[in-house]
Image (cartoon, rainbow, N blue to C red; front, side):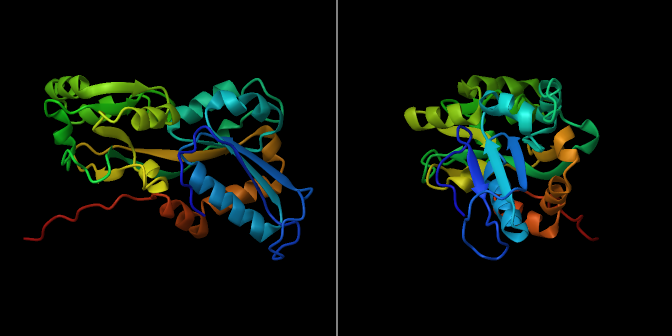
Length: 273
């Protein structure tokens, strides 16, 4: 499965065969898991849902995108909610508190995987950006996202070393601010004067033709995670609980790793004397 365009404005439903192993779609089975969340984890979540559905012969519906597009529906029928950061999950708990079946159960929140911040640059990297410090050079125009799973991200990165001068320099480099990654994608395409985009690595992995990726190294590296939680309705469904176990399994990990998510960051070993 490959996603060739950015996904935060889209919703997808994956229908597994009603007959396990048949490989043919025969309509939505009676057993259904309804899952909602943002666009960032959507490629990995959708592939994992499709695989779980095929194995179990169930209907797994995954809807992803900006929260206002799915929130009202989730309040009525959500079984599983996924998020693009810890603070986003906390927001979802508050936003879904007024639902019935879709009301979230905070005790079931389970962080799953992490992804690192990275720099996206124009194809071929004409500006020659190779590290975070290059973004601080005069004339570099940077796109950032202030919202969703990236709220406060640029300041977390620029402030890692405790230098206000770095924060000031990066602030001067910000040429455009988008409220979410979908809007940022549109700006990136429309405004070719933007040299770099500070964003999660997963967006370039899902859309390699849109930009090249420059990894960020310590001391600037920031990770944020994706997690899942059951709603009150989902808590009563064994299939929903099984789906979360699958997401957290070795098979689920392989799918998420394909899309840029990790469980543990590689740690540099100290040099031996």
